Length: 373
Image (cartoon, rainbow, N blue to C red):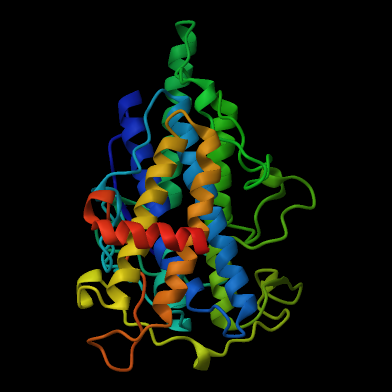
Protein backbone atom coordinates (compact mmCIF):
# COMPACT_ATOMS: atom_id res chain seq x y z
CA UNK A 1 0.00 0.00 0.00
CA UNK A 2 1.18 3.52 -0.68
CA UNK A 3 0.38 6.57 1.39
CA UNK A 4 0.24 10.20 0.34
CA UNK A 5 1.26 12.83 2.84
CA UNK A 6 -1.83 14.41 4.33
CA UNK A 7 -2.45 17.78 2.74
CA UNK A 8 -4.59 20.75 3.68
CA UNK A 9 -7.58 21.21 1.40
CA UNK A 10 -9.69 24.18 2.45
CA UNK A 11 -9.94 26.74 -0.34
CA UNK A 12 -10.82 26.30 -4.00
CA UNK A 13 -7.14 26.91 -4.80
CA UNK A 14 -6.22 24.06 -2.44
CA UNK A 15 -8.58 21.80 -4.39
CA UNK A 16 -6.94 22.85 -7.67
CA UNK A 17 -3.50 22.02 -6.26
CA UNK A 18 -4.79 18.65 -5.06
CA UNK A 19 -6.22 17.92 -8.51
CA UNK A 20 -2.88 18.78 -10.14
CA UNK A 21 -1.31 16.22 -7.80
CA UNK A 22 -4.02 13.76 -8.83
CA UNK A 23 -3.23 14.37 -12.52
CA UNK A 24 0.47 13.75 -11.88
CA UNK A 25 -0.28 10.64 -9.83
CA UNK A 26 -2.59 9.12 -12.45
CA UNK A 27 -0.01 9.76 -15.17
CA UNK A 28 2.89 8.35 -13.11
CA UNK A 29 1.47 4.82 -13.14
CA UNK A 30 1.20 4.69 -16.93
CA UNK A 31 4.94 4.35 -17.85
CA UNK A 32 5.60 1.33 -15.57
CA UNK A 33 2.34 -0.36 -16.61
CA UNK A 34 2.97 0.37 -20.30
CA UNK A 35 6.51 -0.99 -20.12
CA UNK A 36 5.41 -4.27 -18.56
CA UNK A 37 2.80 -4.58 -21.30
CA UNK A 38 5.33 -3.78 -24.06
CA UNK A 39 7.62 -6.59 -22.87
CA UNK A 40 4.76 -9.08 -23.28
CA UNK A 41 4.41 -8.41 -27.01
CA UNK A 42 4.44 -11.63 -29.06
CA UNK A 43 5.40 -13.76 -26.06
CA UNK A 44 2.16 -15.75 -25.92
CA UNK A 45 1.06 -14.03 -22.71
CA UNK A 46 -1.95 -12.48 -24.40
CA UNK A 47 -4.35 -12.63 -21.44
CA UNK A 48 -1.87 -10.93 -19.13
CA UNK A 49 -1.13 -8.27 -21.74
CA UNK A 50 -4.86 -7.66 -22.17
CA UNK A 51 -5.39 -7.26 -18.42
CA UNK A 52 -2.51 -4.80 -18.01
CA UNK A 53 -3.65 -2.94 -21.13
CA UNK A 54 -7.14 -2.56 -19.70
CA UNK A 55 -5.65 -0.91 -16.62
CA UNK A 56 -3.54 1.45 -18.77
CA UNK A 57 -6.67 2.59 -20.64
CA UNK A 58 -8.46 3.24 -17.35
CA UNK A 59 -5.50 5.19 -15.97
CA UNK A 60 -5.76 7.39 -19.08
CA UNK A 61 -9.46 7.72 -18.32
CA UNK A 62 -8.71 8.71 -14.72
CA UNK A 63 -6.20 11.32 -15.87
CA UNK A 64 -8.88 12.69 -18.21
CA UNK A 65 -11.47 12.83 -15.43
CA UNK A 66 -9.02 14.65 -13.14
CA UNK A 67 -8.29 17.18 -15.91
CA UNK A 68 -12.01 17.68 -16.54
CA UNK A 69 -12.48 18.23 -12.80
CA UNK A 70 -9.71 20.82 -12.81
CA UNK A 71 -11.25 22.66 -15.76
CA UNK A 72 -14.71 22.49 -14.21
CA UNK A 73 -13.57 24.54 -11.21
CA UNK A 74 -11.61 27.07 -13.23
CA UNK A 75 -8.15 25.53 -12.93
CA UNK A 76 -5.55 24.83 -15.62
CA UNK A 77 -4.09 21.31 -15.88
CA UNK A 78 -0.32 21.21 -16.45
CA UNK A 79 1.07 18.17 -18.27
CA UNK A 80 3.97 19.40 -20.39
CA UNK A 81 6.70 20.42 -17.93
CA UNK A 82 9.89 18.39 -17.32
CA UNK A 83 8.98 18.04 -13.64
CA UNK A 84 5.68 16.42 -14.57
CA UNK A 85 7.56 13.22 -15.38
CA UNK A 86 8.51 11.24 -12.26
CA UNK A 87 12.01 9.91 -11.76
CA UNK A 88 12.12 6.15 -12.23
CA UNK A 89 13.06 4.37 -10.07
CA UNK A 90 11.51 6.45 -7.35
CA UNK A 91 8.35 7.19 -5.37
CA UNK A 92 5.16 8.27 -7.09
CA UNK A 93 4.13 11.96 -7.01
CA UNK A 94 2.07 13.48 -4.26
CA UNK A 95 4.48 13.11 -1.38
CA UNK A 96 4.17 9.32 -1.36
CA UNK A 97 5.78 8.29 1.87
CA UNK A 98 5.62 4.50 2.12
CA UNK A 99 9.00 3.28 0.95
CA UNK A 100 7.58 1.97 -2.34
CA UNK A 101 10.05 2.59 -5.16
CA UNK A 102 8.52 2.23 -8.62
CA UNK A 103 10.82 1.00 -11.41
CA UNK A 104 10.61 0.80 -15.19
CA UNK A 105 10.98 -2.94 -15.64
CA UNK A 106 10.01 -5.95 -17.71
CA UNK A 107 6.99 -8.02 -16.73
CA UNK A 108 7.43 -10.47 -13.87
CA UNK A 109 4.96 -11.84 -11.37
CA UNK A 110 7.02 -10.29 -8.60
CA UNK A 111 6.56 -6.88 -10.24
CA UNK A 112 2.79 -7.46 -10.13
CA UNK A 113 2.81 -8.35 -6.44
CA UNK A 114 5.49 -6.07 -5.04
CA UNK A 115 4.83 -2.91 -7.08
CA UNK A 116 1.64 -2.85 -9.15
CA UNK A 117 -0.58 -4.35 -6.44
CA UNK A 118 1.04 -2.06 -3.85
CA UNK A 119 0.21 0.99 -5.99
CA UNK A 120 -3.44 0.01 -6.33
CA UNK A 121 -4.02 -1.59 -2.93
CA UNK A 122 -7.14 -0.26 -1.13
CA UNK A 123 -7.24 0.53 2.55
CA UNK A 124 -8.90 -2.80 3.31
CA UNK A 125 -8.47 -5.27 0.44
CA UNK A 126 -10.99 -8.09 0.38
CA UNK A 127 -9.71 -11.49 1.48
CA UNK A 128 -6.13 -10.25 1.49
CA UNK A 129 -4.54 -9.15 4.68
CA UNK A 130 -3.65 -5.48 4.42
CA UNK A 131 -0.08 -4.35 5.01
CA UNK A 132 0.44 -3.19 8.57
CA UNK A 133 -0.38 0.46 9.03
CA UNK A 134 2.87 2.37 9.20
CA UNK A 135 3.86 4.27 12.29
CA UNK A 136 2.53 7.78 11.82
CA UNK A 137 0.09 6.67 9.10
CA UNK A 138 -2.61 8.75 10.73
CA UNK A 139 -0.88 11.68 8.99
CA UNK A 140 -1.08 10.01 5.59
CA UNK A 141 -3.72 9.19 3.00
CA UNK A 142 -4.32 6.24 0.75
CA UNK A 143 -5.15 7.20 -2.83
CA UNK A 144 -8.82 6.47 -2.13
CA UNK A 145 -8.75 8.63 1.00
CA UNK A 146 -7.03 11.40 -0.99
CA UNK A 147 -9.86 11.46 -3.53
CA UNK A 148 -12.45 11.25 -0.76
CA UNK A 149 -10.95 14.34 0.82
CA UNK A 150 -11.21 16.20 -2.51
CA UNK A 151 -14.84 15.08 -2.88
CA UNK A 152 -15.78 16.24 0.63
CA UNK A 153 -14.20 19.65 0.14
CA UNK A 154 -15.86 20.12 -3.25
CA UNK A 155 -19.17 19.34 -1.53
CA UNK A 156 -18.49 21.80 1.28
CA UNK A 157 -17.29 24.62 -1.00
CA UNK A 158 -20.22 24.20 -3.39
CA UNK A 159 -22.69 24.33 -0.48
CA UNK A 160 -21.07 27.55 0.72
CA UNK A 161 -21.23 29.04 -2.76
CA UNK A 162 -24.89 28.07 -3.18
CA UNK A 163 -25.76 29.99 -0.03
CA UNK A 164 -24.48 33.08 -1.84
CA UNK A 165 -26.28 32.23 -5.06
CA UNK A 166 -23.01 31.17 -6.72
CA UNK A 167 -21.17 28.00 -7.73
CA UNK A 168 -17.56 26.82 -7.72
CA UNK A 169 -18.10 25.18 -11.13
CA UNK A 170 -17.16 28.24 -13.14
CA UNK A 171 -14.92 26.66 -15.78
CA UNK A 172 -15.41 26.97 -19.53
CA UNK A 173 -17.60 24.04 -20.58
CA UNK A 174 -15.90 23.88 -24.00
CA UNK A 175 -12.72 22.68 -22.27
CA UNK A 176 -14.40 19.46 -21.17
CA UNK A 177 -12.88 16.52 -23.08
CA UNK A 178 -15.22 13.71 -24.08
CA UNK A 179 -14.64 11.37 -26.99
CA UNK A 180 -16.57 8.13 -27.38
CA UNK A 181 -14.01 6.83 -29.86
CA UNK A 182 -11.62 6.45 -26.91
CA UNK A 183 -13.77 6.43 -23.75
CA UNK A 184 -17.41 5.36 -23.22
CA UNK A 185 -19.78 8.24 -22.45
CA UNK A 186 -20.82 6.57 -19.21
CA UNK A 187 -17.20 6.78 -18.00
CA UNK A 188 -16.00 10.11 -19.41
CA UNK A 189 -18.57 12.88 -19.46
CA UNK A 190 -18.67 16.66 -19.04
CA UNK A 191 -18.18 17.73 -15.44
CA UNK A 192 -20.44 20.71 -14.91
CA UNK A 193 -21.69 20.47 -11.33
CA UNK A 194 -21.23 18.67 -8.01
CA UNK A 195 -23.19 15.60 -9.09
CA UNK A 196 -21.02 14.92 -12.13
CA UNK A 197 -17.86 15.79 -10.18
CA UNK A 198 -18.62 13.22 -7.49
CA UNK A 199 -19.58 10.65 -10.10
CA UNK A 200 -16.21 11.12 -11.80
CA UNK A 201 -14.33 10.71 -8.53
CA UNK A 202 -16.32 7.56 -7.71
CA UNK A 203 -15.31 6.02 -11.04
CA UNK A 204 -11.61 6.72 -10.39
CA UNK A 205 -11.68 5.15 -6.92
CA UNK A 206 -13.97 2.26 -7.82
CA UNK A 207 -11.94 1.19 -10.87
CA UNK A 208 -8.69 1.44 -8.94
CA UNK A 209 -9.60 -0.08 -5.59
CA UNK A 210 -13.12 -1.51 -5.72
CA UNK A 211 -15.16 -1.19 -2.53
CA UNK A 212 -14.72 -2.72 0.90
CA UNK A 213 -17.30 -5.39 0.06
CA UNK A 214 -17.02 -5.93 -3.70
CA UNK A 215 -13.81 -6.34 -5.73
CA UNK A 216 -15.67 -5.70 -8.99
CA UNK A 217 -16.38 -2.27 -10.44
CA UNK A 218 -19.74 -1.08 -9.14
CA UNK A 219 -22.79 -1.17 -11.41
CA UNK A 220 -23.86 2.17 -9.99
CA UNK A 221 -20.83 3.75 -11.66
CA UNK A 222 -21.07 2.08 -15.07
CA UNK A 223 -24.67 0.86 -15.33
CA UNK A 224 -26.43 -2.52 -15.04
CA UNK A 225 -24.52 -5.37 -16.62
CA UNK A 226 -21.40 -3.26 -17.19
CA UNK A 227 -19.59 -4.10 -13.97
CA UNK A 228 -17.85 -7.28 -15.09
CA UNK A 229 -14.19 -6.40 -14.41
CA UNK A 230 -12.40 -6.45 -11.08
CA UNK A 231 -10.81 -3.25 -9.83
CA UNK A 232 -7.15 -2.74 -10.77
CA UNK A 233 -5.76 -4.21 -7.56
CA UNK A 234 -7.63 -7.47 -8.11
CA UNK A 235 -6.79 -7.59 -11.84
CA UNK A 236 -3.11 -7.52 -10.91
CA UNK A 237 -3.72 -10.19 -8.29
CA UNK A 238 -5.43 -12.34 -10.94
CA UNK A 239 -2.19 -12.17 -12.92
CA UNK A 240 -0.08 -12.98 -9.86
CA UNK A 241 -2.24 -15.93 -8.79
CA UNK A 242 -2.79 -17.18 -12.33
CA UNK A 243 -6.56 -17.47 -12.09
CA UNK A 244 -9.59 -15.30 -12.79
CA UNK A 245 -11.45 -13.83 -9.83
CA UNK A 246 -14.99 -15.20 -9.57
CA UNK A 247 -17.89 -15.19 -7.18
CA UNK A 248 -17.61 -18.20 -4.87
CA UNK A 249 -20.37 -18.96 -2.36
CA UNK A 250 -18.04 -21.37 -0.55
CA UNK A 251 -15.42 -18.71 0.13
CA UNK A 252 -15.64 -16.61 3.30
CA UNK A 253 -15.51 -13.35 1.33
CA UNK A 254 -17.80 -14.63 -1.43
CA UNK A 255 -14.99 -14.48 -4.01
CA UNK A 256 -12.01 -16.62 -4.94
CA UNK A 257 -9.29 -16.90 -7.56
CA UNK A 258 -10.69 -20.14 -8.92
CA UNK A 259 -11.87 -19.10 -12.39
CA UNK A 260 -10.24 -19.71 -15.74
CA UNK A 261 -6.45 -20.01 -15.70
CA UNK A 262 -4.31 -17.08 -16.79
CA UNK A 263 -1.25 -18.70 -18.41
CA UNK A 264 2.14 -17.11 -17.79
CA UNK A 265 5.31 -18.01 -19.69
CA UNK A 266 8.18 -15.69 -18.82
CA UNK A 267 10.71 -17.56 -20.98
CA UNK A 268 10.10 -15.43 -24.09
CA UNK A 269 9.98 -12.05 -22.33
CA UNK A 270 12.89 -9.80 -23.41
CA UNK A 271 15.50 -9.44 -20.70
CA UNK A 272 15.17 -5.67 -20.57
CA UNK A 273 17.68 -3.89 -18.36
CA UNK A 274 15.86 -2.38 -15.41
CA UNK A 275 15.41 1.40 -15.27
CA UNK A 276 17.05 2.22 -18.61
CA UNK A 277 18.30 5.73 -19.37
CA UNK A 278 19.23 7.30 -22.69
CA UNK A 279 22.67 8.04 -21.21
CA UNK A 280 23.26 4.28 -20.84
CA UNK A 281 23.84 4.04 -24.59
CA UNK A 282 26.73 5.34 -26.72
CA UNK A 283 25.67 8.41 -28.71
CA UNK A 284 24.55 7.51 -32.25
CA UNK A 285 24.15 3.80 -31.39
CA UNK A 286 20.81 2.30 -32.51
CA UNK A 287 19.77 2.01 -28.85
CA UNK A 288 20.56 5.69 -28.22
CA UNK A 289 18.79 6.94 -31.34
CA UNK A 290 15.64 4.88 -30.71
CA UNK A 291 15.65 5.84 -27.03
CA UNK A 292 15.85 9.49 -28.02
CA UNK A 293 13.01 9.08 -30.54
CA UNK A 294 10.92 7.24 -27.93
CA UNK A 295 11.44 10.07 -25.44
CA UNK A 296 10.76 12.73 -28.06
CA UNK A 297 7.49 10.99 -28.95
CA UNK A 298 6.63 10.70 -25.26
CA UNK A 299 7.29 14.43 -24.73
CA UNK A 300 5.13 15.25 -27.76
CA UNK A 301 2.41 13.06 -26.26
CA UNK A 302 2.49 15.09 -23.04
CA UNK A 303 2.41 18.32 -25.07
CA UNK A 304 -0.64 17.05 -26.99
CA UNK A 305 -2.40 16.11 -23.76
CA UNK A 306 -1.63 19.54 -22.30
CA UNK A 307 -3.16 21.21 -25.36
CA UNK A 308 -6.12 18.81 -25.26
CA UNK A 309 -7.00 19.72 -21.68
CA UNK A 310 -6.37 23.43 -22.07
CA UNK A 311 -9.00 24.38 -24.61
CA UNK A 312 -8.61 21.97 -27.56
CA UNK A 313 -10.33 18.71 -26.57
CA UNK A 314 -10.39 17.52 -30.18
CA UNK A 315 -6.59 17.14 -30.00
CA UNK A 316 -7.05 13.91 -28.04
CA UNK A 317 -6.90 12.15 -31.43
CA UNK A 318 -3.35 13.44 -31.93
CA UNK A 319 -2.37 12.29 -28.44
CA UNK A 320 -3.76 8.81 -29.00
CA UNK A 321 -1.97 8.59 -32.33
CA UNK A 322 1.30 9.32 -30.55
CA UNK A 323 0.57 6.43 -28.16
CA UNK A 324 0.83 4.07 -31.13
CA UNK A 325 4.15 5.62 -32.20
CA UNK A 326 5.38 5.24 -28.63
CA UNK A 327 4.68 1.52 -28.82
CA UNK A 328 6.61 1.24 -32.09
CA UNK A 329 9.78 2.73 -30.59
CA UNK A 330 9.44 0.69 -27.40
CA UNK A 331 9.26 -2.55 -29.38
CA UNK A 332 12.30 -1.50 -31.43
CA UNK A 333 14.25 -0.87 -28.23
CA UNK A 334 13.30 -4.26 -26.80
CA UNK A 335 14.84 -5.96 -29.86
CA UNK A 336 18.15 -4.12 -29.46
CA UNK A 337 20.93 -5.31 -27.14
CA UNK A 338 21.86 -2.85 -24.43
CA UNK A 339 25.37 -1.84 -25.59
CA UNK A 340 27.04 -1.75 -22.17
CA UNK A 341 24.98 -4.45 -20.46
CA UNK A 342 25.68 -7.90 -21.95
CA UNK A 343 22.68 -10.23 -21.84
CA UNK A 344 20.15 -7.38 -21.60
CA UNK A 345 18.05 -5.49 -24.11
CA UNK A 346 17.49 -1.76 -24.28
CA UNK A 347 14.18 -0.31 -23.13
CA UNK A 348 12.07 2.86 -22.85
CA UNK A 349 13.17 5.46 -20.32
CA UNK A 350 10.44 8.19 -20.32
CA UNK A 351 12.64 11.28 -20.33
CA UNK A 352 11.80 14.84 -21.39
CA UNK A 353 13.21 15.51 -24.89
CA UNK A 354 12.08 18.51 -26.92
CA UNK A 355 12.59 19.54 -30.52
CA UNK A 356 15.60 21.58 -29.40
CA UNK A 357 17.33 18.38 -28.25
CA UNK A 358 17.28 16.84 -31.73
CA UNK A 359 20.04 17.45 -34.26
CA UNK A 360 18.97 18.37 -37.83
CA UNK A 361 19.80 14.85 -39.03
CA UNK A 362 17.80 13.33 -36.17
CA UNK A 363 14.82 15.50 -37.09
CA UNK A 364 15.03 14.25 -40.67
CA UNK A 365 15.31 10.65 -39.54
CA UNK A 366 12.40 11.01 -37.15
CA UNK A 367 10.19 12.44 -39.89
CA UNK A 368 11.22 9.62 -42.22
CA UNK A 369 10.24 7.11 -39.55
CA UNK A 370 6.81 8.78 -39.24
CA UNK A 371 6.28 8.46 -42.99
CA UNK A 372 7.20 4.78 -42.90
CA UNK A 373 4.98 3.88 -39.94
